[in-house]
Length: 514
Image (cartoon, rainbow, N blue to C red; front, side, top):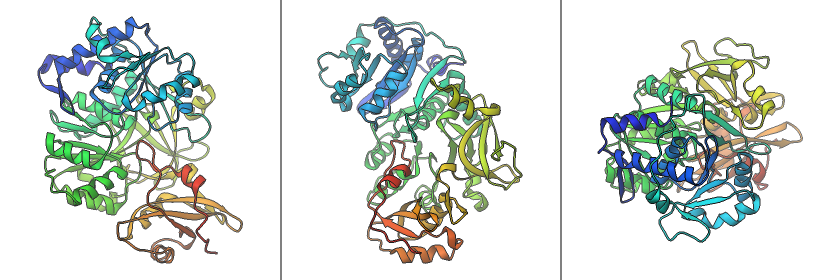
């Protein structure tokens, strides 16, 4: 059960079929397998031993795809770096994982000196851009062209595939260790739960490849014999162009990206009728946004996926047919074929259906643990279940409803307020394009509910308008006592709203309503 197994199967079945399309470059399955083997040989010749980590710091590309396969082909471990992090943060991840070889593209060449200041043992830098190779770096194409192809190490299921660092919401980021079995269980379980990628179709990769959601789509695409259309980074206009040029069938987006894509399409005459599947996840989606997307892509099947890095990453899915049931519009679906899901209280006792508690998950997709963090691993995996840190409830039919991150729950005047519920109501206002709700310190209430809102272009709405709108729909203690209007929300590279940044940067201009 190795990541590379799907590549061998593709080579047997259709060696001359395109596998990747990146810009003007198209590579067939046979070409890709040859290059993966030679890149693996190059890594081995550079001293990369079995079990060693190889890092990648770059935007999406066909070479990124080759790295993700050639590294395990050589028996090594991938360590994809977060492209939004600072040199200090990346240096920490490289140092903790003992990564001594790093691939960089044109966008990050200038960061290399700062990375070496942070991590002196960074021995080898491989340049994987398209320009002249910088001094003191090795050229990717030269290495591939000169190398002798290596036989696939054919890693076993329990072997470590990669170390994927989380965002580090508190202290240093955690390195999530995922095995080949973890990754392939998630991919095969997702595919078995529903056919959410068009077999032999064309799947678009616009989300950053270091993120597990993007990598999951890649693995399922390999299993489904898809052609992978790659854009370097998400840009709504670039996505529209790629869909139209390459007749893309499958698109994976986070809600922030979907919002931007729909805005771009409103200004465009592009033909996007080739899109037959749209999967989304990583953060909650507002119902107005989902309705807008379904109207713009009337023939597309929509799938929601819920999970996290520690779950490789999928746990639950909402199928296209289930999107037509209004009672399930806010559900993230039922557990996928490869997992068990429960809702538990603070003592890890399962709660009755409908009662809110912590979502816990068990299955072969659950991580091996956190790198060098024995206590954190034991706490997260206590009782054999991955404790997600998400609050949710499960209905009588087994559908999961994610309520909030437990840490994002607001306690105001002794009452629990789930930010996701308030956000869902605010998003229904016609002037609201995006919103986030956080708790901020308050002398009277302990915390108060504070909303940060982005309005639609040309939209006007006041704090009082939004409070009145909420008052008709939710309890008084849940209504935002203060509202800040901004032009954009801070997001991670994966498109998630960074509520920590909002708390740190919250505006002092808003007057609380007491």
